[in-house]
Image 1 (cartoon, rainbow, N blue to C red):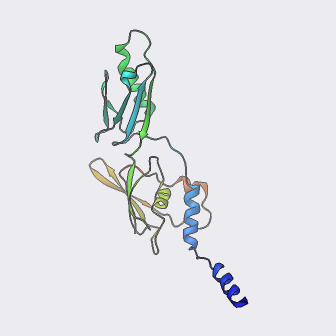
Image 2: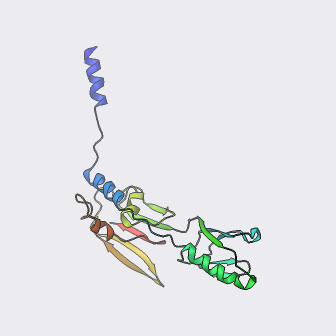
Image 3: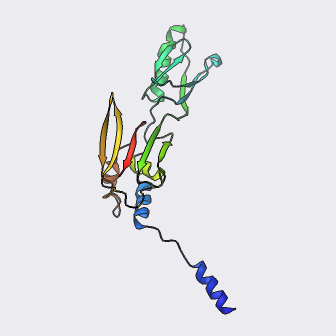
Length: 201
């Protein structure tokens, strides 16, 4: 009976080892979060409200070219704009429709599905991700489960659409993952843009 109890206790005491690199990665990703104002992307759903004018309340999806169409205003370019910038554009477009004070306009991002990027290569769960907020490259890799075994963290690349072509950003994350990264190290991490592809060799 005593032997059975000791064996049971020993079995309960077994722990699953976690690679120190994975722990360092999780810690660094947790420290890297820096909120940034969200800019509107194609595919986002906007809620637009003109105070006191229920007939002008709209839920509008941003078209692939980054524009929306709003009553009495017409086509509005929302691509990469802050919600308050779209508010001002609609407000200005409504001025000619009112003899007195123009009602306040409110624009909010109801569904930020346009912020999408992909992660491929040696990560635990590669694929396409929709965050609804901006993340840096370290946070993006955390969403993919972190680096897989034998991943080369000194040569991570970000493919970014630039005009009619692609630009390549090379990122060295191996230094960040060694010990405690400084605030300066984390501030230098590039932000992921919608449409980026992160490659971990």
